[in-house]
Length: 71
Image (cartoon, rainbow, N blue to C red):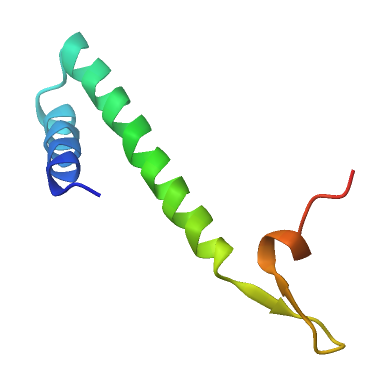
């Protein structure tokens, strides 16, 4: 994740608390939050791809497969 992205998000958050944001800054903040959350979701998904569950019978199943939603 880019350090500049986090830095700008923090700058806008501080400004929002102190002086308020213009409409352009609000739009920028919303866009940056979307990018940030997308990256967090990708990292979380990648982490779950590396997690495995050991079943009571000793077999190992990938986490996402073990906890798939049943239809």
